[in-house]
Each structure stands twice: as C-alpha cells, then as structure tokens.
Image 1 (spheres, helix red, strand yellow):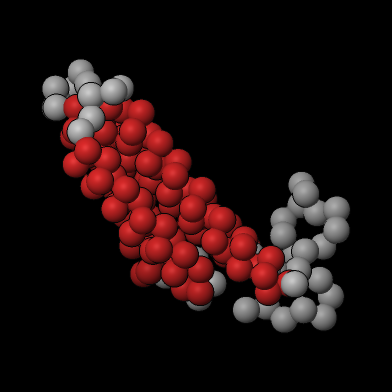
Image 2: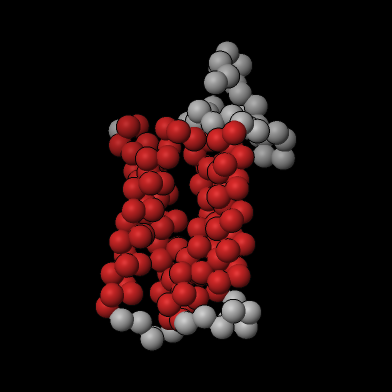
Length: 144
C-alpha cells in the first residue's frame, strides 16, 4: 500500500502542475483559439508532465549550489522573466498565440522551484512539531 501511495503522489504532482500551466495557456486565448493551438498546448503539457515525473529521482541527487542547481535556477528565472515579457500585452504587442505561450512559460517558471523543493523533501522523515523550525532528521536517520 505504501508503494501505491508513493506512486500516486509522484504521479499527482506532475499532472496537477502541468494542468496549471495548461490552464494559464488556455485562459490567455479568451476563446480565440483553434484546434491546432490546443493540440500543441496538450502535447507540451504531456511532455512536461513526463519530464516532471522523471525528475523525481534526479532531484534528490542535486546538491545546493552545485552547477546543476545553478542551471535549474537559471532556467527557472529565464522562463519566469521571458514569460512575463512575452505575455505582457502592452510591451511587445504580440499575437494572442505568443502571449498564451508567454503565460505558459511564466506559470512553469514559477512552478519549477516549487516542484524541486517538493521532490527534494519527499520521503524524508520529519521531527514532529517542527513547523516553524528548520527541517531536521529524526534521530538515527542518516543524511543523504
């Protein structure tokens, strides 16, 4: 039962976060979309969901301030800033399709650090009552 719960938890995070990005993409169209726009949005959502699902084992191995950590931070900031610039209707005056992709990039740029933090902390034993304190391992548990 524990393995089923772990798999369901690992599966729910990519599905929920990818659907949040897709919702922002779809919402930006405001009814002016075509079938091809939704097809591309659905394909990108599926690819991102698979990528987030496969990121779980990698997240536990990434140490803070390592080159991989900085690369992930750089990608997240670039998605956030690039999406913010592209989705602004007053700055570039881009077509609706480009602004929708900007909304998608913006949402995923915000969600990437959240996904990383959730996956890093998954499965670690916690000390009870440590809500306002830093996260500590239970006695006898080895650090990774």
